[in-house]
Amino acid sequence: MSDPYAYKRNARLQTRLAAEIQALLKLPANSECADCGATRTVRFCSVTLGIFLCNRCYGIHRSVGAHITRTKCVGLDTWSPGEVEAMRAMGNTRAKALFEATVPADVARATAISTDRETERWVRDKYERRHYYAAAPAHAAASATVGLCATAPAFAPSSDWAAFETAFPSAPVVSGAPVATVSWLASFETSAPSQPAVPCLDVAGAAPGGSANAMCLDPFCVAAGGFPGGSAAPAGRGGSGSCLLD
Image 1: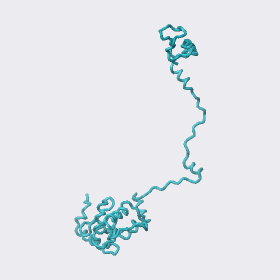
Image 2: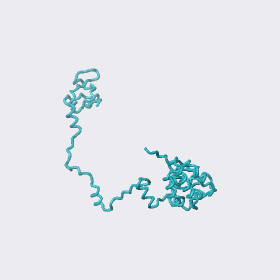
Image 3: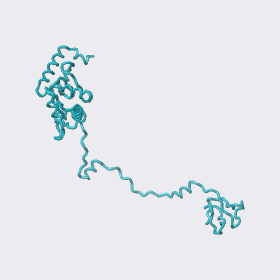
Image 4: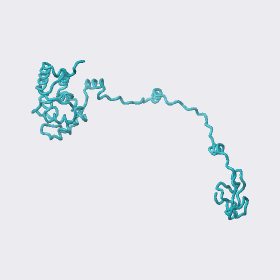
């Protein structure tokens, strides 16, 4: 199994790659910081973004996180052929065209004299939040190929409703045959048998059919005809024939 880090121990390869990075750094567009435009201490870079940075912006990029921007120091760190090729393919000019494509006129860009807080907000807006990013056609196609920054196309229904229904058929129609209605009371009476008749007793414990002043203690007693299957209820205290507990 080959060693994936063998390039770090290849002194001849590292010498050649370091010379290529130094040559890229000497280009006019790369000799100033990609974020604040400072021309001093520009000896750092972001290998994931392909840009060259000053000492202050290098520290800000490190605070943003390697998942957004991974930094290296020119002249100290080792390089892989892929990293050098990424730096050559991007550079400060192309990076600004991508990450500063839609900067509004009222937004102040960071400069060499901006405060650290202003510069950090500018860097995070550019690379972390991507407020001003607009991908070039070739870059967008490459991103879509690997699944980065790709968005699903929005669904637009057809203006012709008939065509839309043909493309998306509706649910099957339920038969329109009438459904027989069942009375819940009839079903209850069928499933639950009638209770046996309970005779009405007066408060004194008189036998069924007692005096007219007897009070019915059966809660199911119906004065008009008695409980189904039973006898008529005795008259109440006022002789009206109504059950006082009904």
